[in-house]
Image (cartoon, rainbow, N blue to C red; front, side, top):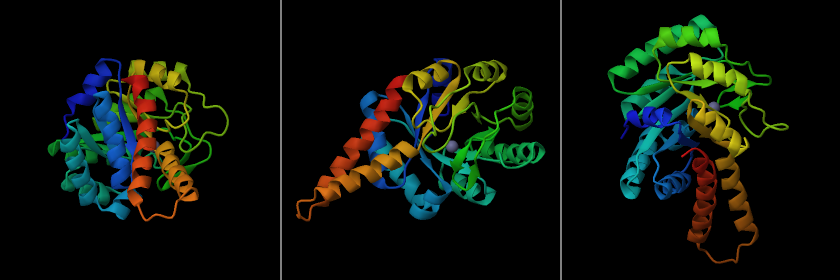
Amino acid sequence: MMEHNLLLDAWKEGKAIGAFNANTYDDMEAIVQAAAELGRPVILMASMSCCKFMGIDTFVMFAKHLEKKYGTPVITHLDHCIDPELLYKCVDAGFDYVMFDGSNRSFEENCQMTAQIVRDCHEKGVFVEGELGVISGTEGPLKSDTGVFTDPQQMKEFIARTDLDTLAVSIGNQHGFYKGEPKLNFELLEVLAKESSIPLVLHGGTGIPVEDIARAVSMGICKVNVGTDIRATYLRTVSEYGKNWDGKNDIRGYITCLRDEIKKVAKYYMVSYS
Ligand SMILES: [Zn+2]
């Protein structure tokens, strides 16, 4: 499924590919529909808990099916994985692109583990994302209240030593809903993008004004992650629909409504950097 060049092409053109967390077939389908309608590739992300909930093989099978059904490239991505064993299982199951998150480890350990994972994954043609600095909020199994900005010097060393494909940076972005106004540090992003030989990734896309996302993309971000907004839209739509339930036993109505709402959210982000 993966055409790795899609990410690099987007990066060179000053564009990005949208990356969305999904947990069921219905949100996966809505996200792929949005991408197809915009004529863009898309990245479907599974968290570690999604892998356990849905099953790795099921996730890959749904993604492959949706790629064929809608005729747009669908890249499968393992988001924030701290467990190498699970990561390798995903690689074997056919994931195109995996993130090893060693941001809670020492710099040295993050370097060594990421480098080993990159070597193993590249042998199988799988792309790897790493993280340096700490993004605040909850990211799967990790939690940080403060966050630590990515250091440009450390970043250069990290990229040189690991040979990874993309790097998630911490520039004021947060996971979950922002407490107060989201404020990206564009001065830092400018330095990081200038010093980096690989595309950078912006996590915590939910709630960042789309003009700011577009600006970050034009500066060297190639992948924008959105999870919270998809989950919140899912839950809001289901509960609204439940409130107005007419008593008929038709679940297709609610699923149609759900898909439409999620599609709108995915498009809202994607049009800003396509
Ligand atoms: Zn993240």
